[in-house]
Length: 320
Image 1 (cartoon, rainbow, N blue to C red):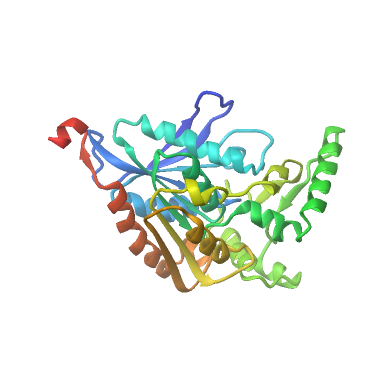
Image 2 (image 1 turned 30 degrees about the vertical axis):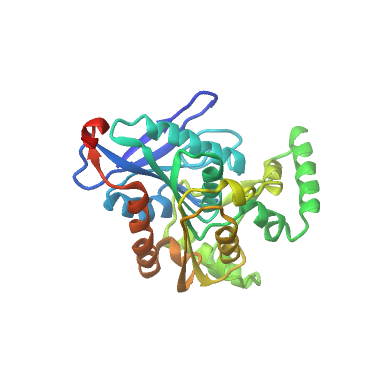
């Protein structure tokens, strides 16, 4: 694995990313590549990297796993900003970088995202046709979640609060950080939390896979753009790439089951597959061996079909 810093024209900070290489990697050859994107509040060292990134590399892909701008090892201020448009721009900037790598076939790049990263990856595929295949793992439309559960179903009231907080910070007040999760599962239960997604997220981030770059938090004064954002807008006409949507059949408050069914129905893709992993939940698909195995059994052959395998470095020579 190699850690790189990516800066493209128009950016004022670097994106930190890990590159996972296939076994017996040969830089003289050309590989299909995947961009693997982490959930909201996560980082490149967690599920997008240590589970799906590692597995896709083992399957023969070059996999690049970025940290979101303002988070993890990436630059950008203010910290803990969660801006959907910036996140999609990050992915497109990462693709610019991947296409420049001599050992990557620039015409065979796919994208995968988990949770909010799944929704962001869908939006990236809608607008960027360099992406030749799309996989959403328990993907969530973050704009929909912000307008509903994350605003207590009062999006206008939440926007008014964000405006007031931004005004206060401009006058010198301390920043307000929304911590997504309780300190522990027991603390969550003691506070009356019962939703499976909240409690299992707490177990994942606090116990199963804690990481220094994982913030599980959001700067309130800069959260307003997410309220008016929609990961699925124009999917009926513009989302045309081969697509696989994976989620568990145990629904939770973050809405991956609902969002997965919606985007599968709406996408214009002629080649689209729905994978419902029976008996498993949103956060089981982050790292639990059996549901991850079931997901990989479907998505690896899907990606190999649509992105192919390793070729000779000279594409003209490989075609002969």
